[in-house]
Amino acid sequence: MKTIGRTTWAIPGGHIPLRSTGPEPDFTINDELCILNAGRQDAKVEITVFYADRDPVGPYRLTVPARRTRHVRFNDLIDPEAMPLDTGDACIVDADVPIVVQFNRRDTSQAENALLGVIAFPVD
Image (cartoon, rainbow, N blue to C red; front, side):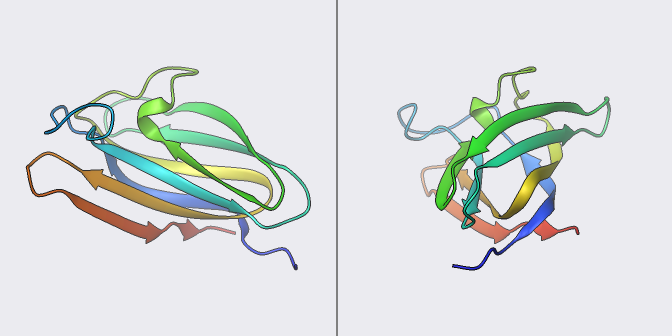
């Protein structure tokens, strides 16, 4: 399989609300990255999160094995610091090899749940 994707991706809009409906953790509101590494080399990924009223935080580091996918919930990003709730954010995803990034949001703020999925913006 040929290598696909880009090494830098941008997601301009994120938000983890304070309240959810339904039992945790299944019904916890979350923003999530879906990362595809179709290449033959593991991808070293760094995520930097931006805010409107404070300095960026990161990098959050992770690895996506070669020829695999990985789903990463923003709720689970804790090092270098946990993501704040009820705060708008954006992020840049950088990798050392080409990857494909999708952004998903699961909104459980009301009984009628919603799921949104969009491809991130390929920067390079």
